[in-house]
Image 1: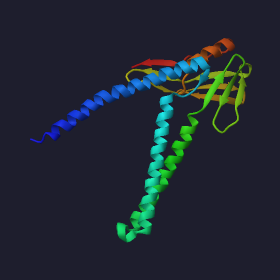
Image 2: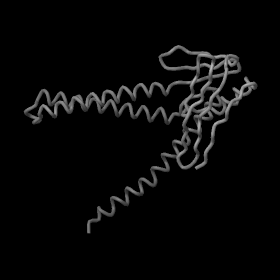
Image 3: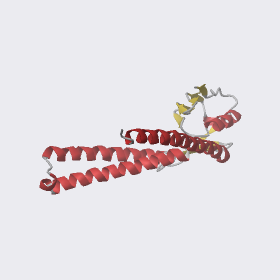
Image 4: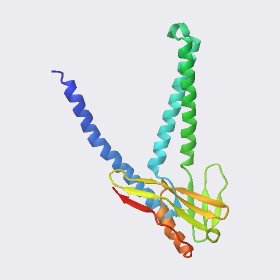
Length: 204
């Protein structure tokens, strides 16, 4: 009897049983902190766990680009040593292009997670990376659309967005951002004349 066939699956099961709850606890804790921070600072934003996850993915994508580029260069420079055919070189070139595109996507996505939307009693400020701050007055709001669905359960998720219309302009707030509920309460105080939909809550 091969004991490794029994021990390895058992160790894997135990590790998954321990690590998954710990990871979920850390994510939940990060989300709660993000909600408290958003309420305290009056700024809607993403959680620290979201930023860390995107930063890790960006680092991984950059490593993939470096690995694909290194393999392609070595195969071109020393084709005899690595026994590389033209087909394999083209394959590494295509892999490099795919990894590079993925790296650009993750970098842009990571930068977009630094967006914040701050508000006070007078106006709303949309702060985006590499863009000029945009200020919106409450008095200019014409209507509000809310398609945010909050699903609570073992794996809480959010989807949809909050859309605030200003005549020909609109401000879109993704459901993944934290602090939307507090912002909506503030919006109702500032514009009691508007019909502002509540977020849909689903318990699974």
